[in-house]
Length: 307
Length: 66
Image 1 (spheres, rainbow over the protein chains, first blue to last red):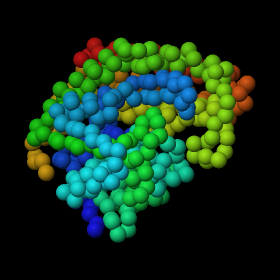
Image 2 (cartoon, helix red, strand yellow):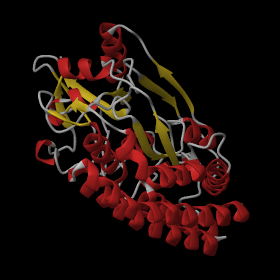
Image 3 (tube, rainbow over the protein chains, first blue to last red):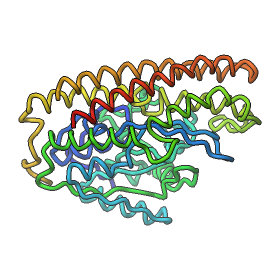
Image 4 (spheres, rainbow over the protein chains, first blue to last red):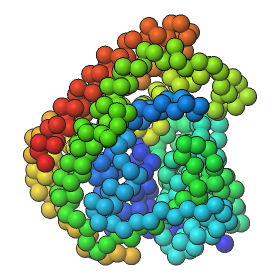
């Protein structure tokens, strides 16, 4: 059996969660830019997280949100994250949604997706949208962000094909710190969401408060200052060797890997460059037009039909 | 409020550019020998602190505006 979600459109995006949500929102008739979704999700922050025994031993991140919780709360969208230990149940659940013409957001470890094989390490916090499948070809059809390493494999409809087996591996990965646990997201968009102008103001206030007054010194502005204080000591404290996470048979110094991954977490890895600050800057620019000019089209509620 | 958002937007883009510089320093350091990496990383330290200052200013503006 083959099934593709009708009227589902994927648009270019740089950050996985924002792009996935944007695509799903548009499917339900609510068109927002990726930047607006990112901003409404209180998307910018900073994480400086040393983890003894982990690879890498220090995690650098530029996000400040709680997954999709903020944007959904601020817009008044009900959502549920479902998980299961059973790969079989996980597939049956999302297959059933696709059969009912519902696109499904999935959390996956991108390492296992066919079009990323050999091009990335493990990251189980990656988000894609399942938009169809073909059981005879044993393929799933999913969205993914723009990435020069994989663009040659993008289909004409903007989706990527990955085998059902690789998708199951990606969903069932146990790699820490973000094992996906076969997660998928159920979203219920209301007939009316919060007016966009109000939503923007709420998101700005929340994001600013979190960034300026983080609960611990590893987050927000305190985290950046801690990173500045500690970066020079990394060669003294990050020692030893580790298997390369992509070319797994090669050993490399842990410091080399940590520094390379820090580069990736700032400049690549779905950040849009500049540790997500470029995408947030564009959100602020777009928001300035809406709160200033009261853009009636962009500020409207969802009232033109829910599928 | 629109003016404040535009100012914050410019600050955030300024910070983005510095983060890109920082990332490139980290990449260069990743290719260096362990004993040379320390000197290279010292170049990143003031730039990271500068990002904290710029973003602190941007978010204080946004907090005041809302």
